[in-house]
Length: 67
Image (cartoon, rainbow, N blue to C red; front, side):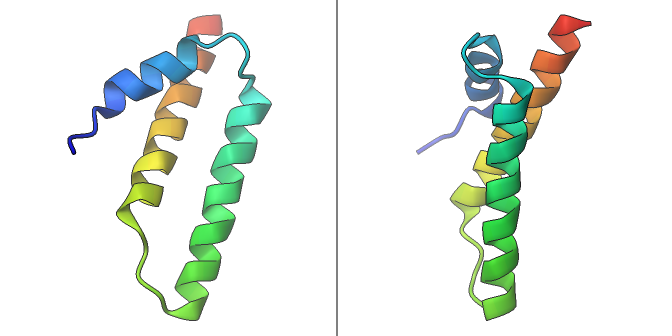
């Protein structure tokens, strides 16, 4: 499965229902979960890394579009 991060983040950034807070909260939840996984010494799922990257890129894109 090939992930197109740019396409996914652009779609999220263009969704008017999602606010900056929604992006921040989602990224925070992923960061908290990654912290817990790391503390338990478990392997970090790559899907979580990709999801965090997509959300951060979408948030940055959305913020840039409003300026």
